[in-house]
Image (cartoon, rainbow, N blue to C red; front, side, top):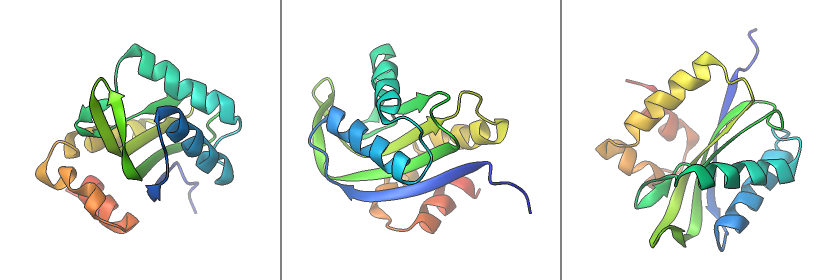
Length: 145
């Protein structure tokens, strides 16, 4: 049996008040799933990426990411918060998130899936991804042609 190369997971209805709270709870989730090794480095990584440029793809959907040796397995995490986080980027809120949590040397296969994911998120089906509640439906939208 081949070794798992990356993980896709879903977290629906996360309760997060602001960007810092969201990053902290996402880091907690990664730690509980044994994907992350250092909560603070995960949070710092998300914030460092946000400083480079905003991650809002279109109003309502953000794609925050973090990369480093504190991530053990390349992970794509779909998250919907209970309520929109106001002022995620400028005055725009976000409630749906595709979190990319990558090792310091992401696999080519992971990067290919991320490229497909970015293209799919701009399609009509991609705009509705967070209306779906199952991992299988999300995988079908993003990873099957």
